[in-house]
Length: 291
Length: 306
Image 1 (cartoon, each protein chain N blue to C red):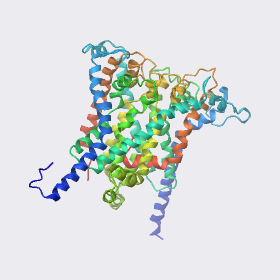
Image 2: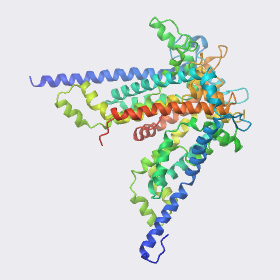
Image 3: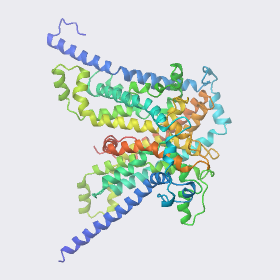
Image 4: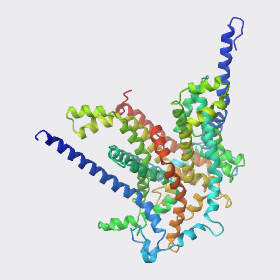
């Protein structure tokens, strides 16, 4: 009996420890998720119920259902689908080009021996830390001279050329874990370099390629500055710019309608995140990624 | 390339294969090479040139020497407030995000049911945070009669006019940034999970208390990750644009007119590409100096064991 006693207090202690951790985690989780839930709840409320309230459920007798239909008609002439389509018109090419160009570049750097390889790798690492602002104005001038201002292409031409060193680096890191014997066997069987990449490596690289695609997509959905600079026309207006026009809404506009629009804008991102959260969490933790 | 005369046929073949490998690699790197020269190196050089010019977006640059820099440092009433606003945001925001991320990772690093669920949930703000929709939300959260003031009022605080007061407005943005600690936290968590349990077992046997273990074992081991994270978070804060442009619009009284926002305003709405290019170099210098401080000082606080 005397021997068991310290063991029991230790057992109890670990339970208290676990309880404290759960309480902290749940408390923080509520604070973090609250703004999103509040936004969603408030999109069913009248202005009077949004003001001065912290509740996330609308009063049962005053649930407003028509904020979502009216938010769907985002502007006088266009539904939210028009703006979504415009966003996708630069985002889909961006995702595809980023994946292709970054994979090929990473393949060349990690699988071939050639003079200058170390210099190439060093440039990739150095450009990892280069902020976008360093190139912003000259790239704008370049786009102007190429006649690409106010075209969707201005937001994806760069991505054809593996300019995102972060993704190149991520794929290189992943490729290092794949045994070289695989591609050597393929080249003995007569595959050329691109065939080896496509038939042998790409299937193994699938998780990292999906991660690259997802991050490109997410950052593109959040991109406001790019469209602000390059997509100045009404016909090319993407979702981020259409939403930005709603930030400075005044009191006369139903807030619920604006929240409904914001909710509609976040839904695809949230949906994709939950469908693929495994890829996000894994790639951030494995390669020490950005946000 | 060998002359074949004194080389054995076998090594000739080898050389041919080597040459083929080399040429394939160069061929595959063509897009990257174009990208890096046309969209990275060339623009960097041009940015330096533009900073010494007057440049309207519809015209061509014309050389004006150091006038842009002179104007910036001596005559521009917005420049110094913008530098101060940027530094305040960086110097308060970075440690805050780091501390929050480390604390949560520390709490999460425990064998508990549902840890993965928390891990995923905490990451959501990082995914959404930059979205324009979240800026809409933040304006309402900090509205004079919004939920933040309502909660503070429950504790007896007077309502704060967050966006009208230059000492409070930056905090709405700092809080938004802190809300997005998720990715940094995930990297910390992965590092914590990599610390070998035998180290803690040994410390337990030696009778070291948990707090002592945190400072003597955990923190030293993850210092390389801490360096990596702090550079990333620093870069992120220096480049903040969306929140300042949309939520506070740079105001009130330039309290949130971060350099990245000011550069945009000078380049596009004000049509002064040359002046904006000069401002860019100030922002890059700020990033360079603080990153260098982190790197140089890291010799004293980062431990590399392998």
